[in-house]
Amino acid sequence: MKKSFNIIGLMSGTSLDGLDIALVKFKEKNNNWIFKIVKAETVNYEPVLIQKFLTAHLMSALELKYLEKEFSEFCAKAVNNFTNDISEKFDLIASHGHTVFHQPEKGMTLQIGDGELIAKRCGINVISDFRSGDVALGGQGAPLVPIGDELLFYDYDACVNLGGFSNISFKNNNKKRVAFDICPVNIVLNHLCQKIGEKYDENGKIASENIVNKTLLAELNDLDYYFKKYPKSLGREWVEKEVFPILEKYLQTDSVENIISTFTIHIAFQISENIKNFSKVLFTGGGAYNGFLIKKIEEFSSVNIVVPENKIVDFKEALIFAFLGLLRWQNKINCLASVTGAERDSCCGKISFA
Image 1: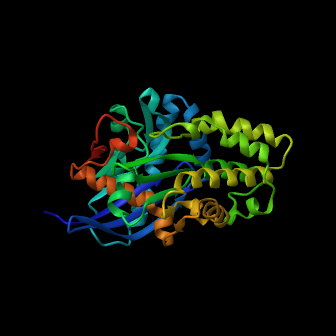
Image 2 (image 1 turned 60 degrees about the vertical axis):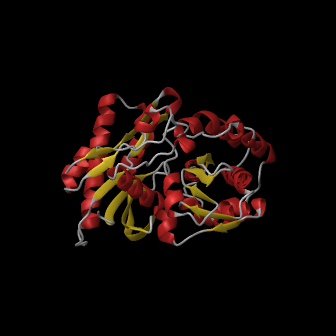
Image 3 (image 1 turned 90 degrees about the vertical axis):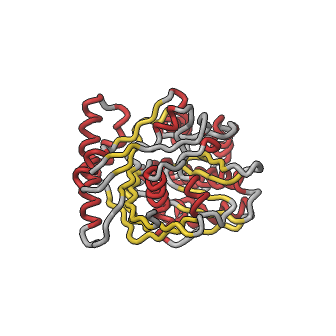
C-alpha cells in the first residue's frame, strides 16, 4: 500500500489576500502522519477579482457562474505555473474553493471553484466541495481544520488560526476534538485599515499607538455569539449584520485608528478567554504576524504561545486541506462530528478525475 503522497492544497480565505498553494509530501510512519511543505506561495488576486468576491453574495446565478469560471481558470493557471519547475508526480489537488454563502442553520454552504475544470486543465485529480457533506448531515460545515490539528499537530494543547476569523481546536475533557470560530480578525481589521489607505495593520503598529474606546469594547464583547456554546461558526454575513453597524456608529464620533486599536484589544480578549486554561498553544495565520495582537493575547492569558516557522504560519490551511484531500482519497474520516455538530463523522469532498 502506498505510504507517500505529493498533494497540492489550495486555499482562498475570507481575508482575500490571494490563493495559497502548498505542495506537501505526506508519509505514514508507525500509524502517524508526518509532513513536509516542499514549496508554497500565495498568488495575489487582482483588485477587480477581489471586488467580485466582495459582491459575490449579491450576484445573480448567471453572474456567479461566470465568476466561478473565472476563479477556476485562475486556480488552474496558478497551479500550472507553480508546478512548472517541479519534476515530481502529483497525486492530488485538494481545493477548498472560495466561500460565497455559509448558512449552515439553513442547511446551505457554497464554495465556488469548479473541481472538474481544475482537474482537466491541470491533468491532476481534484478533491473539492469539502463542506456540503457535513452540512447535509446537520453540521456547521466548519471548521474542517481540526482533524489536521489532531493528526499533524498533536504536540499542542490547542491550535488557533488567525485569518479572516480566528478559530480554535482542542481536545475536550472527554478526549473528543472540538473546534469553533472565536471572533472576526482580519476581515474587520483590514476593512478598517482600507478606510485610511492601508491594506492591513502591519505588526499592530496602528493598534499599539492609538486609544481604546472602552464603551465600544464593552459593546463588542457583549455580542450574543460570544455567549453561545460550541459548535458554532462565523461568516461574512454575520460580520456585516452584527459588527459593521456597531463600528459605523462609533466611527461617527471616533477615529478609524482608535477603532482599530479597540477591535484589536477585543480580539485579544476573546481569544485569551478561550485559551487561558491551556499551557502550550500553536498560533498560525496572517494575524500571527501582528506582534501587538500576540503580545496582548499572551498578556491577557498567561499562556505559552508558539508561532512556528513562516511556511506553517502562512500555509497551514492549504497544508491541512491537502491532508483532508488525502484522507478523502483514502475513504477515511476527514470531518469530525464532535467539531461540527453533525449527526456523525464523515468522509467529505467531491472527486473530479483528470
